[in-house]
Amino acid sequence: MMRRRGFLSAALLVTGLLGALVGRMPSPPAGAPADEGCPSAFPHRLTPTPSGSLYDRSLAAFLVCTDTHGTRTFLSNGTDAVWVVRAPKDIPMQRLGSSSLTASFLRYVDSPVPVLPAGVSVIVPRSPGTLELRIDPLLTVAQLAHDEIAGSLGDQEEGLLNAALEQRSGRARAALLRCTDAVIAHLGDPEPVLATGDPAPAIGAAASEVAATTSGCGAAWREAKTAAFVSSEQITSFAYDVARWEDDSTFRVRAVSASIAWWALVTPPGTPR
Image (cartoon, rainbow, N blue to C red; front, side, top):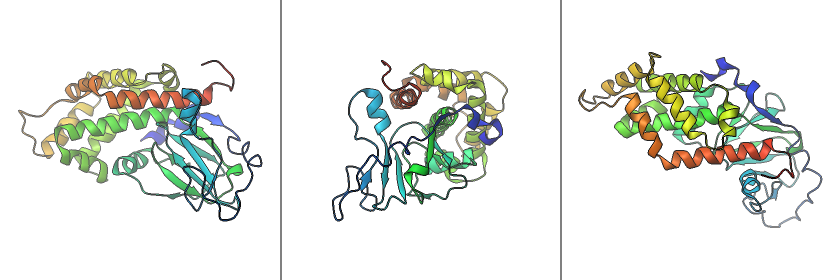
């Protein structure tokens, strides 16, 4: 599991991202409609609406709203990167629904700090000025790899995808976890991967390297398909399935988008991009 790899040490800390906004925005008058994108219970938007450069629009896709008293915060991760809440410590968080794919990734990570994968919305019972957020490079590439590997299982047999995501044990789940672990290990330092601006080829190359080794991923892949009663003549190998990632435009676009969000925080304001 990823917790064994010390993933938090690789992340970029964005201290005071929300604190800098608090106090500069006036409270909306009572009964006023919620700001664009904010739910009615959290009508005050602290992040700008998407506009300006590609980097500005990407960062604005992470929505932050607060209630009228400024005591609770609504966070919605519209970026393709994975964010973590680093402070306050041991903060409770209410998740507002989650897809089976996202829930599977969260179980895989088993993080000691709150994690906000791509597409997740949460309510935090704290003032926005007390929160410290960051994009985590390793978790970002890990979610990209996890989701693409899960999708490849589903390409062979839809039941394999459901089993891998929804079951806590079993061969399909074991194949997903083992192969994701192996790909992340072969990928190495995630920051240079995101810095390329196009992480998908590097993730695919790491997966191809895994397929060529005896990491156990390939065997687990075949065992999962055999257990799902896919005939031996029809079973496709991990190497074959990974080779098809090159044609997955959705994966490529999502990976580029994650890289842009990361760069938007890495690059100091005013730097030509």
